Image (cartoon, rainbow, N blue to C red; front, top):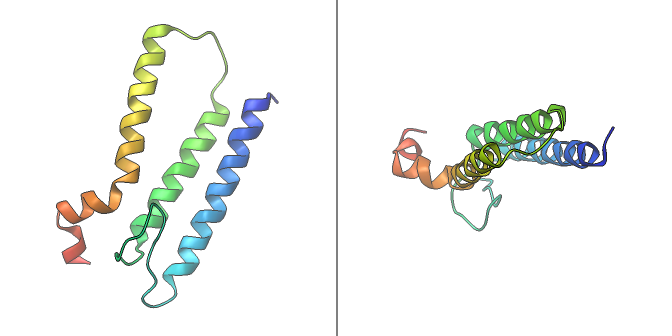
Length: 104
């Protein structure tokens, strides 16, 4: 197993532990999520789903075969990763803008 795969799998394990911590935190009344900074928003199932998505991304990265880097594919991958990263970090803000916080 190559060194980068070990690092990716370790990050998946850390994300999984973080997901378990958020799920445990959901059982406590009035708990807030400080995952990406200070917020008054209560923890929700969407935090668990977000973290599970990140665990899946890490596992997919570990299973991806290594090969030569092609510039066009690298640019597309970096752009997709940046967009996904912004969407993941801004999950709570997007839910607020789309009105999901009023329905839950």
